[in-house]
Image 1: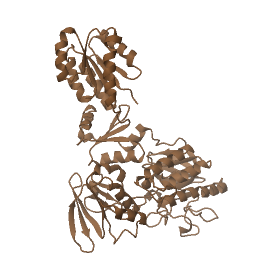
Image 2: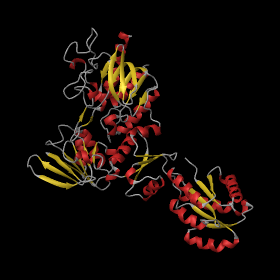
Image 3: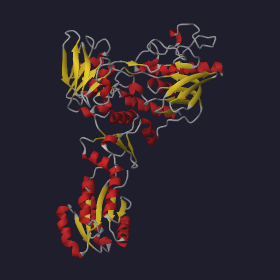
Image 4: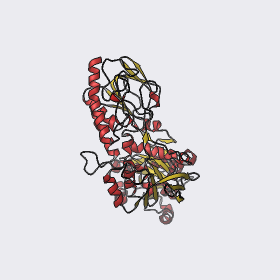
Length: 552
């Protein structure tokens, strides 16, 4: 944690040097001593401290200075650091001004020059003031601060990226927080340039992309080597399990993740049916534990990074990445997972990130305090989100197309939802339109049985309507079904599918390309559960070993 600052201000260089020397001697071990030779310079220093989220404990300021005297400076300084203690250094002739400043600048004390010896005339006064300051001091949040608008899709993207990558941050809404407005002004950031991301070192980015943020916080996006024994594309539970088992068994392993480790499961607010966790755990917790485990075994993790192409050049499988670079390997595991299916109704695309969200329960829950929340979907992910939102929202309404939740939701979740007084389930219901100019204001809901349509006020709509794979980049190489899911093992239609060059049949999780495997939700007919994804990822490494033993 950065030391609190004691700022001393005097236009006389000799006096400034002397007071700074005395302050360092007594307080340098606990405070950072900063000095300035003019009020304007000192105010600029304070703005920079504010941007770095540092705090000022005490101002020790000379009264008689040109352009801006000490009292005038303190009147402005207390707007930036209102709880800092304020001491004025004065000559005897300025004592009347110092007394008046007790009210105008909320002065805590004034000292006459000279202050020698400091052990008698300076330190006892400052000791008392600093002890009083520490009694009410609460250390500021140390880390990234995000300043933006709740209804800005770009602000939502930044928050979601940081949250999913387990990076702590503080959110400041420009519409609600005076501090946010102040910080944006100091950073010369207009509202059109938001979101503003402030880093602990004082750096700032306006409207940053995930890649720019990743670079600043030290996430790795480029591979350290051109070749690996095993490359895993996708960092969900299946990919993380494959990475842990592959690296722990001696394979040089790299994992490539497009957004954040954990995949879609990483956005889940609570997973309660995962073996070994009787009280459940969040998807973020699961992802964090798995990433730590993978890194402990030496897995190289690239995020955010995306695979965009694949070609076979025996005995190598070569991936092209979004930045144009290539990685080659002997064995490749596709753990691509799935993405939320988009809802094709008027208004949704335009308002996505501005009141309409896919997943994102944990990112936006606090903003929904005391509000009404609507959730589209009737599977486990929707039920978990409803339970999570019920802690914050006044009312949570689940809109389900079918006649009940029993066809697609685990019974334990159904029981929990029925027991929550602020969760209601509307069956045979679908949303026809999302309404609003710059943010969501209302939704139109139709009952499939009666045909009735009602329009209700709404500021938050969360969509969990199933998922679909993103596998178009595999066209012409890896065989898929008509929905884009990857075919493996016995699901391949032919004994010798296109691209197959070996005498044996494909292993259980192997695609039509020898040495290229698929696991988890992206695989055709896979069980869409976290535990099954982890299981497939772990056992797939055994097939990788069998493949490598016969071709190398």
